[in-house]
Length: 380
Image 1 (cartoon, one colour):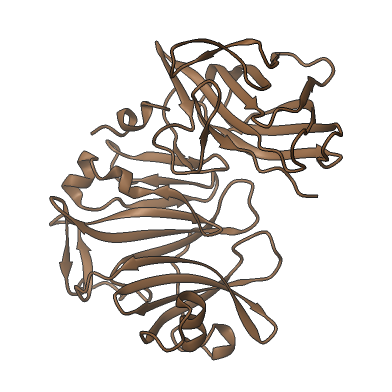
Image 2 (cartoon, rainbow, N blue to C red; image 1 turned 90 degrees about the vertical axis):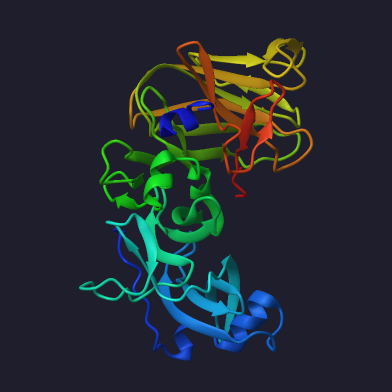
């Protein structure tokens, strides 16, 4: 299946993760601390630590420690942070073991085979499921996200590997969505590489027929397709901070990490109602108040708006150019109000939206029936 067709329906350095096996207890939690933190039972299955790595995984200045271990039928990558003499458990990625022993990918046979590749240096970090771990910065971040190559087995594919991506422990890239891809069916592996300059990833990087870039939009990894914009979250500024019944000036900054498009619609809606007004001489932005007529794509008809909606029309948006939307908002129900965001554009006669039904980031449908991301409002 062509990747463009699959996704069109809706829409720091890269380095090998070298783990140190013989590290002191001071550098990572003990086996009993890992069992207690991850499973809540320090007398459960024994833990076999394969390696650990100190790396910055979020906005806090403290370094986190990633620990790769096996326990029972699981292979786990867990994140911890040192707190005095103890360890705080942050999150985990857990996969079931294949129990197949040493495996390697044979490019000539297009398959995963038992044993070790002759003439190649043994990989210092690899498990039965996690064949490769890459830590890399995403656009706008000053910390690292984790990308892994996961080996799985499902009929009729048999053994195959796909990439998965996690930012602060939350999934942002799910390579299992590519199971129907014709090149994965042939090669049994979705190889990937990191572009340090653009801070993006590319699958099938050595195959010009199937090579495809993925970019981060602030919520998830999106395929960068021709004639498709990818409005990416840059910042959300609220001055002063939200308070019930008090007006704040809100500035949403976006950047197009996709391709040039002649017309993009950016929609911001407010399910908790409240009061919205435009900021000064705002061009290309229209405010719909409660009761104004909007179109619902699910019902395929015009309906009265249930709550306020801002729609910005951005013309001629080129790659890597920013665009800002300013407005005043007075929360009615909460000092941390729910605000929804989505983008739409026209591809020939088709209306394409981001997010969409293939999105793995959490979304809600707005009053017009479109999937929409939740904007995380600043807390201070």
